[in-house]
Length: 88
Image 1 (spheres, rainbow, N blue to C red):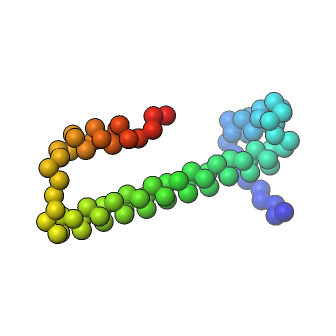
Image 2: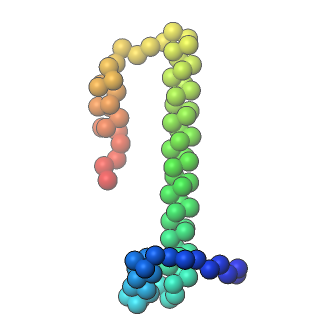
């Protein structure tokens, strides 16, 4: 496994040390690896959301160019989206 030295602010060092001392991780490297896995996952989710948004915009532009418009108001559409989206 490759080695990398990283500089962290003191509050992050304290957090890493706390995670290790509480037994959740065996070493500071494990904490950093987990953080990077989470960051990678979050970035993949963002990329997926962006791809979906681009696809939906493309569909809307194509429909508009073909003269197909919705009779729904922005408020109606927002209400539908809010009902469909899972609550966190």
